[in-house]
Image 1 (spheres, rainbow, N blue to C red):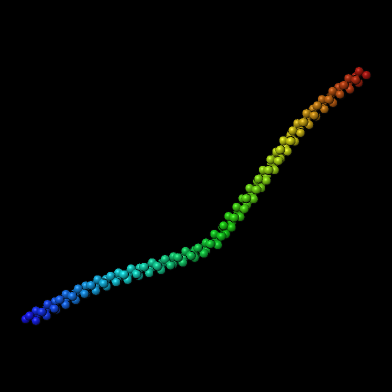
Image 2 (spheres, rainbow, N blue to C red):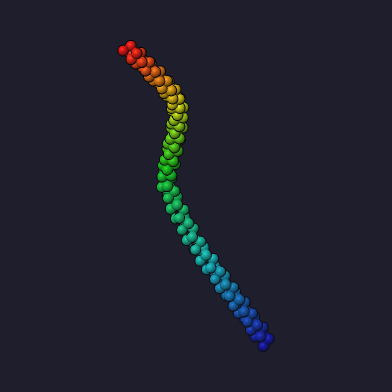
Length: 138
């Protein structure tokens, strides 16, 4: 009987260990399945990121020439603005010179006008003097 008991205990112990090992194997398989699922999702995410990076790279390649063209246009506009500013400075300088000349001419004109008035006055006085002499001769 003791042998049978001992065998039953060994069998029970082996069965218990076997159940424990099966449970650990199942837990390990579940973990592996989760890790595999996570790995698959990670690979999908990596593939999607690669596709997005490729699309972005393609868009950048298309944008680069347009960006260069816009930069060239901006440079041209800045040069035109500078030329306009320089032309405006030149015109302003010419205007200032013209105003100085106009002021000089106005002064000269006033002086000539005064001289003309004085001459007209002297001419009128002479004419009056000549008329008086002619009248007194007649």
